[in-house]
Length: 172
Image (cartoon, rainbow, N blue to C red; front, top):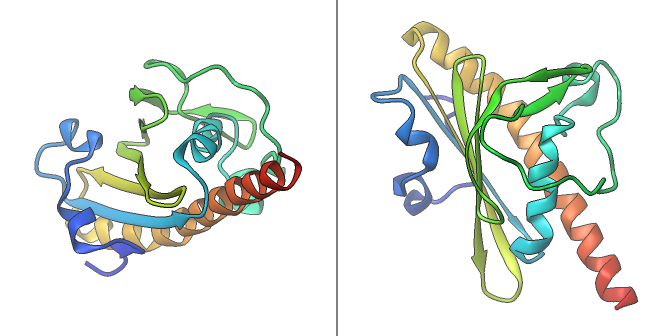
């Protein structure tokens, strides 16, 4: 399907994601990924912080309010809590979490898993998979729309984690 993959390898597409447990035979499946030049421990707080802001295109998702560029010291996410906040409203809910490794939530009928895969030399693969039951005709539009928003989100999270890691290294 057009727009179903960005930045992922074939092996990352074939792996199991927590969101797969919540939707059997999804019509929409989309994978996104980015390599972050920081260890998973530096990436995780930013992933967990999607609970308070979308980190994509704030002028669309967040009514022009800028997603925080500093960590705010949130407690670890818990199943049942709101999944994200956009435009001042809480959206969705967390359905699975393994702190430091994965965060899975649901919003508007879609289930999505953010998965952190540690790599050599203090780098991390930040992967996102989205699954959904929807009409086939709608899946294409959703996939392309999600591609733009999720790509921006992952690149923002990457930049913020790398910036913080670089600052910590420079001052540490």
